[in-house]
Length: 277
Ligand SMILES: Nc1nc(=O)c2c([nH]1)NC[C@@H]1CN(c3ccc(C(=O)N[C@@H](CCC(=O)O)C(=O)O)cc3)CN21
Ligand SMILES: CC(C)C(=O)C(=O)O
Ligand SMILES: [Mg+2]
Image 1 (cartoon, rainbow, N blue to C red):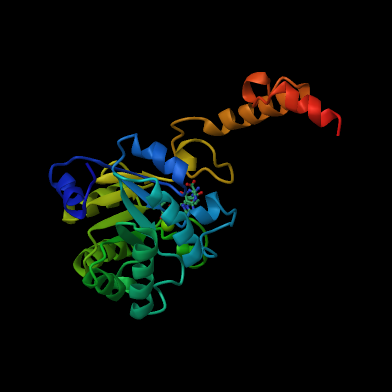
Image 2 (cartoon, rainbow, N blue to C red):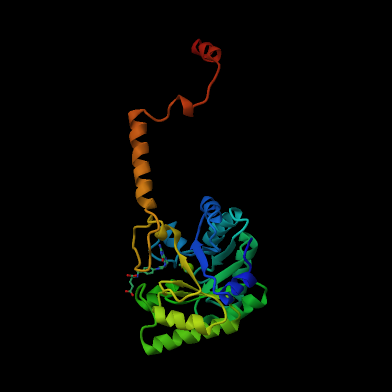
């Protein structure tokens, strides 16, 4: 049965962990749907994993709509969240509502996600007031990579930890129904998870969160540019793919693929007639 904002919030109450993975295309969405995971995130991490950018800053609304709509076409039964890309909501509350609305209308997703705490309270409130569920994202927010000086864990000092806790309270108060905690110390994430009424979804935020999210190419072992410390390889799909590509290359070159079984037949007579032309 498909989750809703209500059933996801109830999972926190009953201490049932929430599983989320990123997804960017139709065929992967079909596969994920048969796995039992609770939620899909069409993350702006598609800038890295699908488009080959060094960060998420170049990702556009058009990119998110293109991939988001493909994922939604593959999902009958999973709650889908689409990331708002860099500069689609930071510029004004008006831009935030217009662009959140476009993501909902043009992809068919169930909720949107945006990065930031206190700084985007007004945006979260306005999008929520428009009837669009919002997932917040605090801690190490990759769209601020240049401000952070790299993809570095946030919240180790007392001042930073206090700011992140306040961000968590702020996004909850503004109306977010869920919050992603990225790359923050495990004990800080556990404390925030206890204090908030809304579910927390961790990535590099330890075992105390109400759920977890990973980039699917990371957990399948098929992304090689970098491997963050929080990633666990649940498969070595990268190795399997390279082996299959090698086998194909060899068989094509050796003439062992394709065989007759992979081809289509035609009446011999027709070929004989064509030979005379
Ligand atoms: N494939 C992929 N996976 C991700 O998790 C991800 C993306 N892309 N793109 C957007 C952001 C970028 N993220 C990143 C990228 C790198 C590290 C990383 O390498 N961290 C180091 C250093 C941590 C530190 O020094 O504080 C690590 O060892 O984990 C972490 C998160 C998370 N997001
Ligand atoms: C890793 C998650 C939280 C994300 O924002 C993304 O994939 O873009
Ligand atoms: Mg993102």
